[in-house]
Image 1: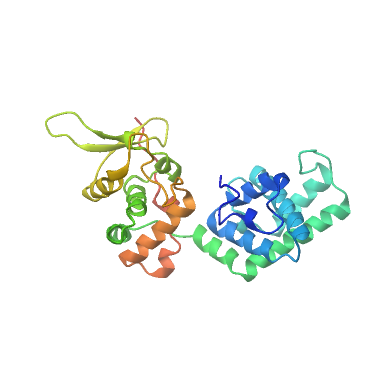
Image 2 (image 1 turned 180 degrees about the horizontal axis):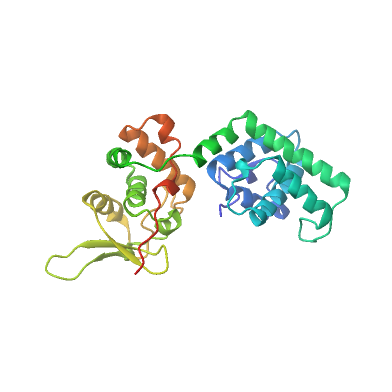
Length: 280
């Protein structure tokens, strides 16, 4: 999870950098970039720190309930029926740690705040963007060719770590979490008369070796120049591990640099390049 002092954390908003709000702040900070930005803008638009705190607590309660009730559903893809179900649960079984039902007046206030958030998300276009992203089509062979061209251009601009992250994502289809955990120790040479460089990814039931492509080999040479054994292979400029927001932004930049239309490039997401890791 993100640290609440990060520049893009909702914890930087006035009134939200409080110890008792830490879990709620971390919950919001761990959302996908579009949802996180939308929540942050909505909270920033609240008229006072006290109102901001109340809205944060209620939205966090809603998100925890949603995660338990509909784990595959993105918050911006929800509708009024989901708010109704949350409010019904709050009235009957309770939705917090206490497990006690809430008073009707309390539930009505929560409904109004959640309605405010959804109305804000619609006004700023976030709901439409989320639905477009959810319906984005798989990446074609030609788009992959353009993406590889864009990766080379990122590297030429000195953005080797981002280029490597996107290159490995495109080549392996691994999850961002698996890529972010790679270290220099995961690079190996196969034995034999004609050794082959491989990178070992742990993204399933067992480690899986992937051969280096020439492009990845050049990027690895550039990135590993200052790395020691045990160092992360891919990290952000400030040294923090890669996360899905950073990789998604790099993917969009590589797509644009390679010549994909902006409308398509902005809809690309790491999950569109993922594929199940082969089983050993």
